[in-house]
Length: 329
Ligand code: EPU
Image (cartoon, rainbow, N blue to C red; front, side, top):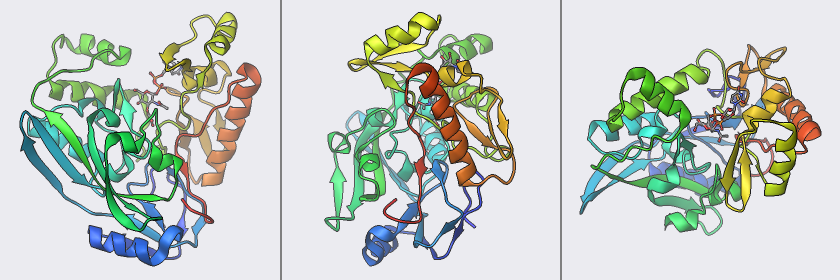
């Protein structure tokens, strides 16, 4: 059985563990595109059975070096993300504080360009070292080559092609906290910290996340199940006419809406459908209420999607990666 934060049963017929890059690259060469790579399994929806070979990426190591005023931190793909955030903060290196407590591994972070409370991984990425499964060689990619976007990247748009070996981040010693996010500001006021240090920002983010998001050890979940939709400005106008207080953020040439609000307005918050449910404090999060399968989650996601599409004519896109037993990841 494969441990995953959604808490769904998944049996892997052939499971291997890569403890270093050599083992990982050799598994990739042996199995080509058939091999399923998994890290922290915190953003995947798994099937009941995987006949395809599975490799758990458990490579470890964090290297920190000075480069003039900045510090370059290289972490292996199998490192735990929050562990890396804590380690860098502990060394007085700043930049990752808003990304505290995001579940998962370092290797998964660039795939969806993790982001929270006004900061995205892309802003701190110096390079990503990958094994290209088509050209069958190790490459170091610059941030532009990774084509990071909102919860997406080239790794996500070419599923299965790139195996991430390590990520190099650029951090510094000067504290420039990003505090624009309303939830963060509210918590800072509550704590009476008008001018927080980066460690205090991380503490605030941890508190906000713990309050809003269900603990996957108690309620299986993958964080947001949908991305926030980006619509054309005139579409946002149309929806705003019937929804006073519609949450809207300018995004490129379009407008980003809050999927949580749209799902909430359709009345799904706290909804329960047997083994799965919609989290009562954040309807973007679907939770395992006991013995749910990946298909149960996908069925509930389909229901919510259809409901939002019917009421607002806005299609929602899934945020986690759905792993199937056929084809590439
Ligand atoms: N809202 C409601 N009803 C609710 C909850 C929220 O109407 O019950 C509205 C609120 O008005 C709020 C808006 O929805 O302004 C957005 O909610 P929130 O601030 O909680 O953030 P989000 O857009 O739902 C995103 C990320 C989260 C990240 C938070 C904080 C995505 C898909 N999700 O959520 O990331 O932690 O912002 O930055 O972008 C994840 O990716 O797994 C994840 C948890």
